[in-house]
Structure formats: C-alpha cells, structure tokens
Length: 140
Image 1: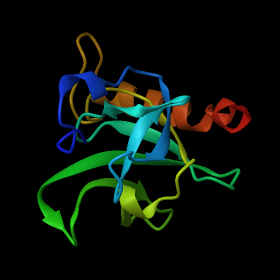
Image 2: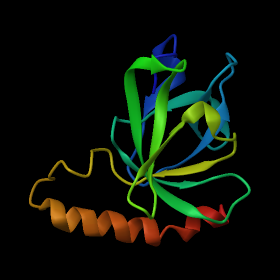
Image 3: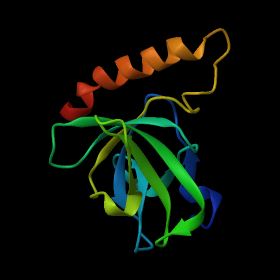
Image 4: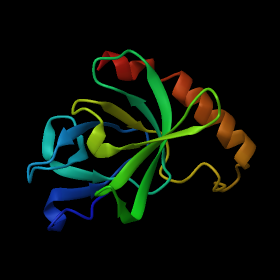
C-alpha cells in the first residue's frame, strides 16, 4: 500500500482495530488509506489483512481483504477483495472506491495464518463476529 510514498515521514504501519478512511492522495491520481483527520500520512496495510468496509454514503458494512499486486492491473496495485453472498470474490481497486469510505483493520495478518495459541477455525469465527459487530464504524 505504501509503494507511492517518497519518504518515511508520510507513512506508518496500520494498527489492529484501527479505523481508517480512503483519502485522495496529496500527490494526486490515486487513493490511499489514512487516519481520519491526517490526510497527508498513508497508513500501510499488510497484504491479505482482513478489513470491515463501509462505503461512503452507505450504511452497509462488508468484509474484505486487502490485496497488493506485484504488477499493476489496469494501473492499480492496491485492491480490496470482497466476498459476495454467492461465494465469489469481487475485486475492487482502492482507486475506484470513493474518498470518505471508512475501513476498520480487523487484523494485521491474513485469516489463514494461525496466531499463537489460536487455531484458524476459532480466528475465522472471531473475524466474522467482528465484521458483524462493526456498526460502530457507521457512527463515526
């Protein structure tokens, strides 16, 4: 997520359970994730991190994973991968989401990676419960 940043002063790593917003990058031409109220500092999201996403102007909150591509796809490197009710993935470039979209970082590791003392089935249940319990995102 941070390959466009030119120096360490305008980026930082994401924190678990942090609320972020999609912001039009100050260099123009792309979107990035920032802390609300700090649009000049890009927040770096690890590849495959699970997220809860509330698109600007909507009350719906959807689960997604962050995906960073090694090669550009139609000029984009950063994507959100949504799982649709039919079980198929919907891949949306970060640049195609409206600025103001709210994103909560649910975890800093991919769901299939086991955490110490936690099996993956327990984590999957916890992640699903967190997405379902994220209405606070709508009230920020």
